[in-house]
Amino acid sequence: MTLRLDSTEAGIATAARLLREGGLVAFGTETVYGLGADATQPKAVARIFEAKNRPRFNPLISHFPDAEAAFEQVEASPLARRLAAAFWPGPLTLVLPRAAGSTVSDLAADGLSTLAVRVPRGDITAALLRQTGRPVAAPSANRSGRISPSSAAHVLEELEGRIDAVLDSGPCAIGLESTVLDLTDPDRPCLLRPGGITAEELEVLCGTLHRPATQSDAAPVSPGRMLSHYAPGLPVRLDVNTPRPDEALLAFGPQNGPSTAAMTWNLSESGNLEEAASRLFSGLRVLDHAGTARHLRGIAVQPIPTHGLGLAIHDRLTRAAAPRPTSVNPKENTLP
Ligand code: TXA
Ligand code: MG
Image (cartoon, rainbow, N blue to C red):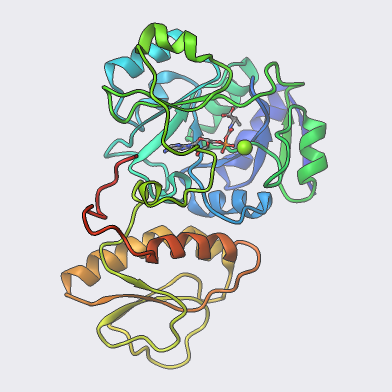
């Protein structure tokens, strides 16, 4: 059942509690309704992809009540601070290098070394984010491939029964997603997605804006975009039933008997795809680091079902297993 919460003090308090407990809560912003989860809890974030029926993971925007909270999670350049002063709270999302102490989960950031942060406008939204006290990851609150919702009723049409609650703050003023600006390279601000704040408004502070080689909303299929994600240094072999003794095993489901692999990280012993999604990035990192230290030849991945979140897990693993251009260091986490 999905609770419909009014934007009273009690409604906001309930929404914040549900978020802290790992629940899914849709909430209004000035742009569109977002499907929120505590960005620091990978299991909660995995539920976002499950509820949206997303066939692939993609990096989510983390939402904050104010710039100070946002800038605890990223390395804010002087330009980022000027833009924040000019446009926050408001429909501008900034992509910046993730801070060393960032608490946002790898699943929310899709393994990137960067993080998209945003301070939405509106007292109810700010109160919710302040009371939650954690970064809130939120894509638009629609099923994958459908139109973004600009009212609580739209959200319920799409997600009734799939999420814990919707906090009704009335219709969204803008109805169109935020502008996404990549400031990872301080000398080359790049407009990834046009939106509520126009390019002309930004250029007053940024100078000329660059455009990405590929659309940011498009499937990250080009090798250039793949390199922007965490890619293990060790080669990845998919659909392996019997791993070699010099491989690390990314397992899924119950294991019969001792493994032939040198080490194992089980994504979910019970075969639960949400749990598997929430443990995917940490598993890749652990096996990559430990396997490299032990001079293993690669990471073998057991077969994973392709229904539900399995599809997104497959997509991510296929990209991790794809051959990489030899001229580029796959460990480089730079955006194209
Ligand atoms: O207005 C909005 O931005 C709404 C409300 C709910 O805040 N949110 C939204 O989220 O539109 P979503 O997930 O539908 O779109 C997020 C966009 C995507 O284009 C994604 O690729 C980009 O932001 N993005 C997120 N993190 C990124 C990163 N680290 N680097 C580059 N692009 C990033
Ligand atoms: Mg969207």
